[in-house]
Length: 117
Image (tube, rainbow, N blue to C red):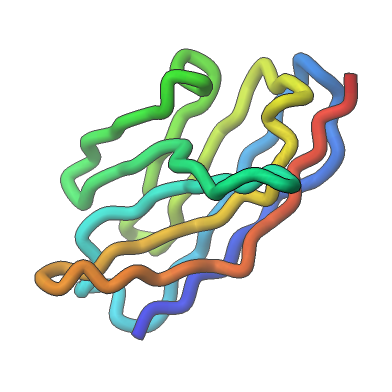
């Protein structure tokens, strides 16, 4: 079992920055890759960025060049640095981890990011 806890959300003005953190605990060695998702009110949850155990990253087109995903394996923590934030980035951001082999998904409870115009 893996437990994920997000932090770092809040209210920021357009053009500002925030850094989200996701602390993982439990069976960390079973994690293959991790990701950040977001869900805006009335919309489906969407993938924001992924990072593999080897450090390879991938981003949604809407955040490329503005967001950076990273992970500190020594601290069992994943980050999402968000720069040049836009009002359309307002969402609940969720941390996700996928297990090796059977691809079981683990989710955090989410952290709210609100970008004011």
